[in-house]
Length: 260
Image (cartoon, rainbow, N blue to C red):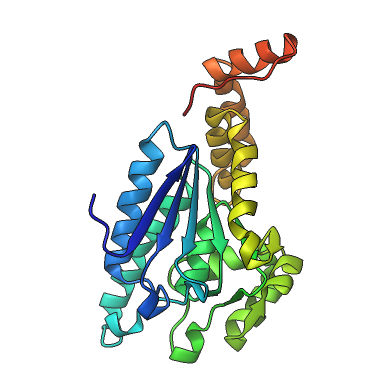
């Protein structure tokens, strides 16, 4: 796969995707969204990849927003199609992947960049990171799930304020709000996400995929998350991972899971 807007690195079960458009502060355009989808899909299907990291190249930006020049002259219909296609291809896709996806926010995460980070299963940030949804200052609203995921993560009131003021918050505020899990110096970002990835990789990839499914179910209208959890719990009992995990526990040894 030839990548024009991404860099991809593999290291001991971890795939790190660097969004690589430094001249645009890694802004998302349609080509980058398609590349991200294709690369994430391939990684999700690769049994050797157990954790995926999304970050930005350079030290200034994770993703500084969507590429405004690409849609500045769109009609209402074009705008709606852009949002629908982007959500399907990337943002909803990431949220429902069976492989854990961590956003490593290494600088500005604005607009579509923050929406990308929020679609990941959880987030860590460097201490220089700034986050916000400035779309209303351009006469539009967040269109890649921002109005839905931000209230889920930080509460309705804080989300309303952040969206309506088009303001930015720093990494520590984001941590206090529950938007990111950890804040570390930028030089420690790689070591931090690798430590978290290694902790995840000790566990059953099948069980992790089921857990992602069950947690997400709570946020789907018309779906009973408890029922999804019950069914997923039961399905785990028929897996080789369950047999290995329980046997290893009873034999007082480390479990060796085969992969997803």
